[in-house]
Image 1 (cartoon, rainbow, N blue to C red):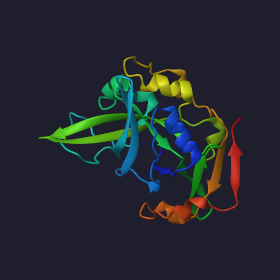
Image 2: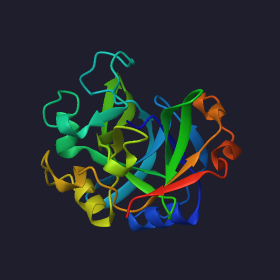
Image 3: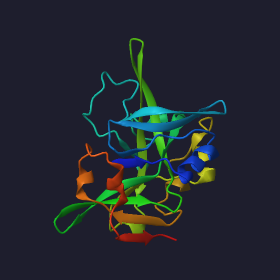
Length: 225
């Protein structure tokens, strides 16, 4: 599962965008929740574009825009069989660049939020997108693809977003080629070490958008290679 992300303008995120063909800086936004706007990178005819997309996929064939079904995450295991995700998986793949994401773990006193990042403070999250239209109005929306958690991350959650490395980014963005449902990029493994930091429980409310809340306390755990 991936239900909150941070986009913080930093050198690592800027470098990731340049590697993906985007030469601009993203405004800092924190505690982004489903139905809010996410930066979505797409590529067409070799040209990369970056624009905001609603974080909750609305299929092009849907009769209306709603939240009846949880469409902010797409399980990698069902991409080829799901009516909502099958077509985007074939030719509407994109990337959501973030600096970190949040997960909650059951601890004494209730659910405890943790921030997950890496040394670069930049992740390329695999995403799918679609455009829903009514009359002349179009809605670009997206979903973040998830996979089973790597063993080292399971004490925090049983799912994690699919995070792409450099070569995987190029393959994922090349919508002229299909990707198999059992492709190794979906493997439940940490491709770089992760740093996990305990946060204030105030971030559990998506209304709290203060950047300072993402600083956390002194308890940081490193997992992975």
